[in-house]
Amino acid sequence: MAANPSTSEFFIKGVTAAGRTFRPSDWAERLAGVMAQFRPGGAMRGPGSHIGYSPWCVPTTLDGVKCVVVNSALREHEPMAWDFVMNFAKDNELQVAEACLLPDAAPQAAKGAQGAAAGPDKA
Image 1 (cartoon, one colour):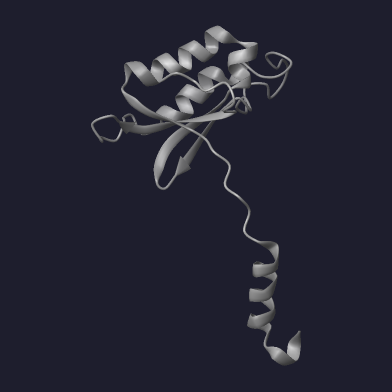
Image 2: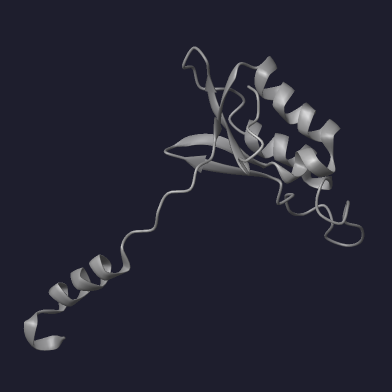
């Protein structure tokens, strides 16, 4: 998949192009673990440095599907690491989707719903 330069994040989904669940079940944590050293300011050193993921490559679950969220900053700072992650997805025929921002719910609508729940005499 060709990356859109304006997109800041991509989801590598644990589902193949054929619709099968990708295995092993901890693949997202493993991939993010390998990428943990690629982070702003470089690899961490010292006690506890082996704990934590890079903010540029984070495992998560979306709608019950394991995913890895990859930030485009990785491409800018570590092009070979970016290629590794994207080639992993390509080689394993994993679905890759560009992240998009969803508009926030209207604050007034949410506020009105809370007031209605409280009842007319408790506003």
